[in-house]
Length: 121
Image 1 (cartoon, helix red, strand yellow):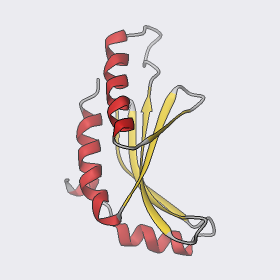
Image 2 (cartoon, one colour; image 1 turned 90 degrees about the vertical axis):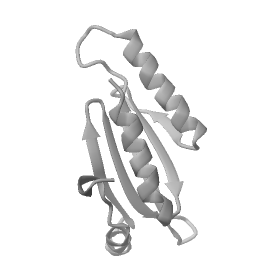
Image 3 (spheres, one colour; image 1 turned 120 degrees about the horizontal axis):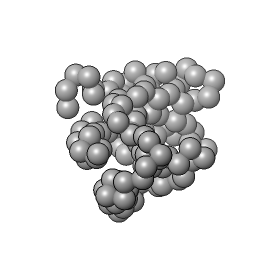
């Protein structure tokens, strides 16, 4: 992953531990119709976990709906669900995809996710 997509996991953890909310988040990549970020949050058990969040907009940029684009996005969402991402729908017709990963898997998972979402129309 290039420098613009790099994540400082230690810094995220430090910020989460110091924050009143016990959470930190950093946007890694924005593209047409998506945003990807990673963060750290404290669980109910007091443990800090790393997570990746992708937000995919299902709304077209114009009033005209392109079914082929929606099908491509749906295939991507199905792939993320199969990888263990939880999917939730937002009021603005975007889908939030989130999954927890061990700290050492964050960078390769982000690289894979950026590659997959950057190919979406």
